[in-house]
Amino acid sequence: MSGNAYQEDRGNKDRSITKDGGGTLRPGRYSGEAQAGAEGEPFLIGDAMTGGYGGGANILHDCTIAVEKGQIAVIVGPNGAGKSTAMKAVFGMLDLRGGDVRLGGESIATLTPQARVAKGMGFVPQTSNVFTSLTVEENLEMGAFIRRDDIRQTMAQVYDLFPVLAEKRRQKAGELSGGQRQQVAVGRALMTEPQVLMLDEPTAGVSPIVMDELFDRIIEVSRTGISILMVEQNARQALEIADKGYVLVQGANRYTDTGAALLADPEVRASFLGG
Image (cartoon, rainbow, N blue to C red):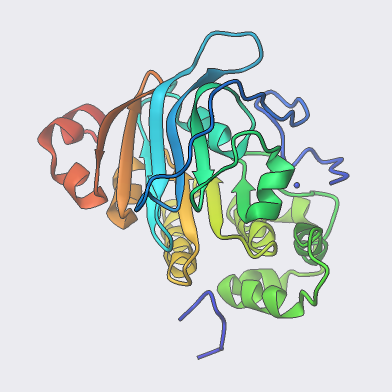
């Protein structure tokens, strides 16, 4: 055993944390009503979320997603279902007009994304999620910008989790393959020592072999007690590793159950998993 705990976004000229379309991240506004957490509710919950971007129409409609400590929750659904929007709402990038977001029983709905990172949330966007002009190691160092302690042990854990990054630590991230960039992005988020890791389409554009490897690493991270909330286009494979699954349609919950139960549901299989 290596002793690796994983195995037993500041000055961003590369726009690695952006809204779709390339605009800079803008915190969403909250006009809902914060609620005290109910006894026994999940560690992280986006509760009955309704909202959209700016002055536009609502994209989410009374949508609820949640994840327990050390578990994997997966959001799936057809294109345009509001999957990534729900993730961004939980992270504070959406104008939330109803509902609440709570972490450990505390409402965080009024906090900026940066403040949510300080509370223990890590977010990995689908695209433009690395500093391409910086080396792998510099990317990881940037991930630890909120920390004031020694980051070397965490960096060693990331390198144990993703050995290829250790080999390429001096190489610029922009020179890496798509799968390797995704590893850098996840590793950078882990450098904040998050309680919750949020992943938006982590396997988009990678080969099946790389997808399987990324899913294996995600499982390893969850086993350390970190909660994983993930939007994923490869629905069948994602539900296979999910403790909880959410199927969204037009910004609302259509099905909610364990990953295994959703895979076994004939209606879910026929409508969303290709039979």
